Image 1: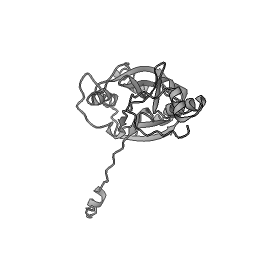
Image 2: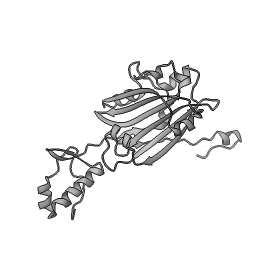
Image 3: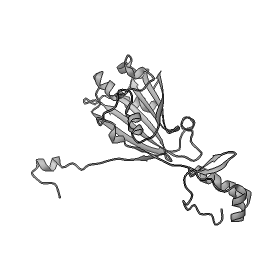
Image 4: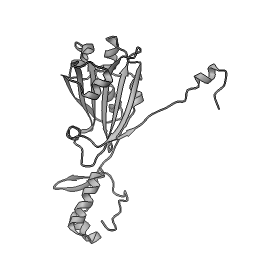
Length: 249
């Protein structure tokens, strides 16, 4: 749109001028206005609420912290990690959970080192914040390990599936994290209600026991317009200390 600049002066939830007002203001065609509005919607800046019009999208991203998975936290008996953390921020979290026994996707079977024909228990979750679907978290476990456990129930596990695995004798001592960024597949678009042009980040974690046995694969799908991925790192000086050299100040 000739001369149009997105200055950020409109507040979240503010209504944009009508198509007719935009045509008059910028002296452009109706087609140009519609293409410009579609571009703003594709970028996640504007939402359409017909017949009221177009509005500035209110954006309050979720901070996703993969390194926090194995930290001990004082979760309540009624709420799991996700619910506890975001309720404390004054938001309204909820989850939809489905559990099924399935043949594992090829990439899951490879990571879990399963034999042909082995089945997995799949816990599929869509996580919501303030009524909006924010991300997908699908976890896969070798069925032989979890068949009669709480992992098979389609409900929140307050202490977490990782703790259930530990109680079954499969405590995860090491995790391999993988991050991918791409456009979503149709299933993800449907489950998350994604608008056109919204990329996703995919965090895949494979949990291993101390003996190196893979016991869980979890894939979290993070829409790019709703998340900030935050990793925290700390330099280790143990090797230098053992050799008698002090770490730099």
